[in-house]
Image 1: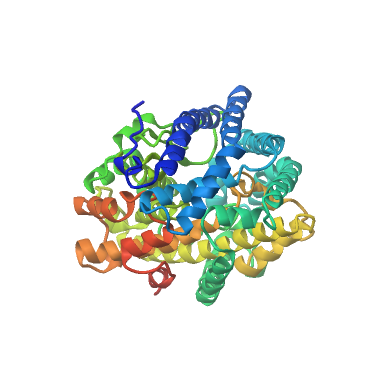
Image 2: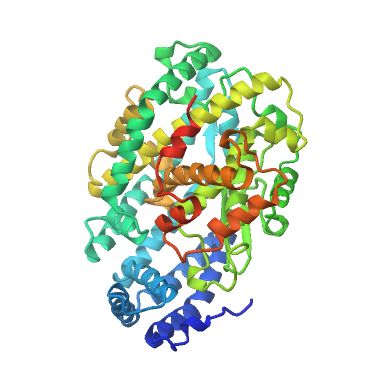
Length: 551
């Protein structure tokens, strides 16, 4: 592993001696622990073995112990106060101190409490990894759940599969309740109302601003979503031979109605059934000047027992060891997923210069990396993109019409789903003793307009892995969609001087150049707000997103 470079700006020549010493001490101690944790996390998720999850837990405990150091936190806190007053003149140094303060703040609770949180979170994550839905006594993988909900016209079977997929919620409900209690306990020890409020602060977000943004999105999307869903429901009812009024959650094409059902004339999966998804990704990213061969070589991409059934990208060491976990099936969903995860991979230490200090050598924010991933993911529904990549599309006119509606519906549907996730988590941490089953379905009915099954009283919320293992994260996916639209519009103008709706990037290395200069290379030297303005010339807003679901 290459040594981490401490730039001359931290040398102390500009009066930042104490800050330089603190930063250097932190990196020296934490970098190897973070690398070890990254490897342990990867191994646990690729094997599902008890011993590997135990090593993952132990690695996280070592990081937590280092970050709970009260003396170090007091030094960082004093330096933050100095930076806030303008006494630390070097902007990069001040930025690192601000991020260190947030990193240490979270861990200034009783060590035993931190260990309990890590242990409980680890147990929940492992339960998700090893869970497989059971239908009529037979285990089925996640891909089978998805394919059944997409393809079957048997409502009875669909209901069985949907209900089986929710079984993980019951399996983790008690552990999740305990985890919420522990997380809230840690937050109140730190002076916050609850864990949700703490997490927003740690992620440099304002709760009032966030709810206002989502309220604005609600107003922006409610009417077009209602119209689109009416068309979807009519087609879906006809396809499945049920009445519109009888449509239930299992009649939609994924377990949470977070994707657009394929109810239009063309099958968006058809072009991918015989396509080499990895080759398409390799060729696409290489063509825009962002090659990913090294990432693929380190990745784990197909289903196997015990392995996480989901998909993610991880940067192990901030020095280029970037990997993707996936479970590829040749269909449009996995084409989009691979473009998404590999989008994360190119926005990482692969393309953030090693000259950027270690603490800043990461994505500006989780919403910006999600935005980049979504920006690339959208091409999986583009016939122009497919054909230019050499994939034949039968019935092109029908494909275009279906893809246009699915893409538009996808943006609208996802925005409504994110409303549920944000508002549920906020309410859950504010009052975890309320009837969470009812809260979940009240929000689903309000924002997604999906009916609660009669007499259903199950912890369906707990079957969403993000609520358990990536808490107070999901709203960043929606903010990422706003970022994706805004960056795409700016790139389309700067590189192609073309309509964003027709811009597909293929073979243009200036795309990679734009993304590196405007999005990747700053790393965390800028806040997410600053990066949005730097990359696009405007504050983050729903304006470009709204244009993307017009028509």
